Length: 322
Ligand code: NAD
Ligand code: UDP
Image (cartoon, rainbow, N blue to C red):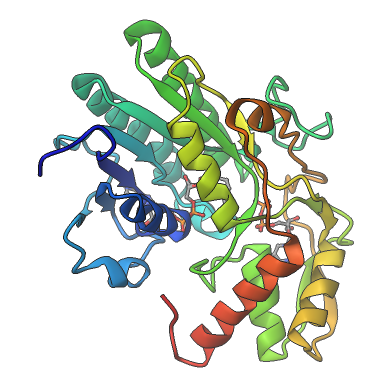
């Protein structure tokens, strides 16, 4: 394919997952050629089924812990299970995916002189003692706990990105993503938004872990993807790390109550034990993203939840939405 100044060939690792599939949609809509590489550990072909016959889309089944030899102009590195249930299922593989995956994708970017984006996470802040979290906060992470395979893997990936930048002058873009939700979340991955909606739609008890006083900030997927693209297209000297998330902060109990209200469910709320190392509070300071990317979320929690509930409603009744 002949490329003009604005059309690029772009690799999305983890492109069959929740965020990755939305990113593929967006990049194709912007006129790019997209290669999606995914080992389908937590992603699914269903998430990208609507793209199968798209002339500018290609799927490769590939595990990023192994090298990949292709020719692209840009790389978005999203491959990594994101939900605690999934990333704790095979913790050694989770660390390998983050660390070996980063080394392989950075090596590819270095050979191609391609700009590379890393999907990092608010988990690099651990259970933060600084609130809200700014990018210059170094975090409070347990290095040997159940969440460490993910948190430390992502922290090491950030280190690798910045060392490739300093040592090899690679153009890097590091996004620290805060909790994001929306259509195509996996219904059984145990994340709070999908759990609560599925439980409410089935009329099952809503499982609040601990007292439900812990907080999270929830960003709708469309807002996040806009942030990804703005970061990737930002001037070369802007590397991040930059927080991308919605600064609206809710307790988990509040979330349960909103989901019950919006679904009209008769579900009760039940308490379950709080998982180990569960962060007590989390809210992004997005000043940097506002200033450098002109980005901020536009979709309020209730509006995003209505759209996500509609998706799960269709999914559970057997009519899968695209
Ligand atoms: P997801 O589990 O839906 O998607 C991850 C994708 O990566 C899946 O398609 C999976 O099959 C693939 N994958 C996993 N291991 C792989 C490997 N070794 N090789 C190739 N592919 C592999 O999760 P998501 O929510 O879409 O998250 C995408 C990225 O964003 C992840 O890197 C995650 O850490 C990051 N992130 C997500 C959130 C969020 O709230 N969704 C928050 C912070 C960071
Ligand atoms: N949580 C909950 N009930 C559930 C699933 C999660 O109370 O059924 C809580 C969990 O303990 C955490 C918060 O919701 O405090 C967000 O959990 P999630 O797994 O979605 O993301 P993370 O902890 O990685 O932010």
